[in-house]
Amino acid sequence: MTERDRGTWHDAHAGHARHRTSAAVQPSARFNLVLVASSGNPSACPGAQLGSRKSLPTVTTMRIHPPTPRLRRLGPAFFGVLLAGILSILTPAASQAAVMNFGSPLSVSATRNTSEYLAYPGTNTPVPVSPDAPGGIFHTPHFGADTALWNAGVAGGDAVSPAAGQAIKVSLEGCAREAAGGPAPLTEIHFQDLSPLPGGGAHVKNTSQPFQIPVCGEHGVSGSTVTTYEPVKLCVSAGDYVGFNDDGGYVENIYRSGVPYEVIGGARGSTMNSFIKNDGTGDGALLSSSETSAMDGFASNRSEELMLRVTLGTGPDALHACAGGTRGLLAPIRVSPQTDGVNHQRMVAVAVFCRVAPVCNGVLTLSGPGTGPTYGRVVFAVPGDTTAHVPIRVSSQMIGLIRSHSAGVYARLNAFVAGKTVSQTIDVKIF
Image (cartoon, helix red, strand yellow):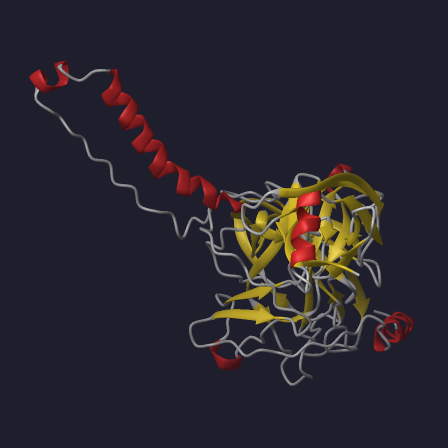
């Protein structure tokens, strides 16, 4: 690299604008970590991690041969009961499909790093003969800029998400390798939801909060160490990739091609894509396969696999903010405890709040506690993000109860909107 090149890339990376902070967590001796961001700790709902080649369930099949005379007396009812029994056994297993795995099976160790094993031609710079350049040529594999990695194909696994949902856990095998005698490597990393583009590229749709990758050699960490991270809200669409992202970590004359993140394994039949660009891999970026050069842009890395596995939550195991998720979803309407008065026309106005846009269309029913009689019913429409007082004409029966109880009576208010019913006990009296 020429002095001009060194100066240009030193200036570009010395003041890198994408610095974020996150507390590091040291790996345990078992090499199985769980990192949770300080900004939140969404609990992963229980469920079998289907698809993992390391944790396949054992199935035992038993053959039963009843005596022939016994079989002859068995009618259709027997087989109906048998079928019902089989379905009852299979139903719990099917319900666990809300959580599934995709990505690398993590069947090999991460032995290759991002500095030396990406498919860029690089550049050769004439330099004085030295132990680092015995032939007077120094080779720089690529720029030490922001880098995105993702699996385009996984041998024996699925590279893309099988459904829409939330990446509730990301397991990454490997570590950041420190340069001999150099400063500590940048350990901040991210994970990204990437939508495929024609030709092998990808569109960055969503980036996780920052995490810390362990350093090779510290506390026994190596390329076989698997660290599990829990993104706060990494939504994933069906058919998308989940990739690895780093900020490069360039340090002049030390981390010339960025920090060596040892997160790649040799895997015949797999293909890992990469994209390098200074400040060019954030949310909304197009990682185009047509953008190529000797030092950055897109590259397809054959027989290499990003050692990254995703646990995907769907339905009740995914946040409602993610497509296909329902966890944390609030009812479309809210009814709070309240005291309401009846006027001389037997009308009582109850307060309700509509959470959804553009409008809440539904039915309000006022009845006695428990399974008591219905005192009033009305169809209503309340604009979204609005509190409204909906009038209900109550029955003369309720008026009689109120008059006999000076402190008022308790009634159950049911609001039915968009297939959901919200109930609240309210106090009704004559003002």
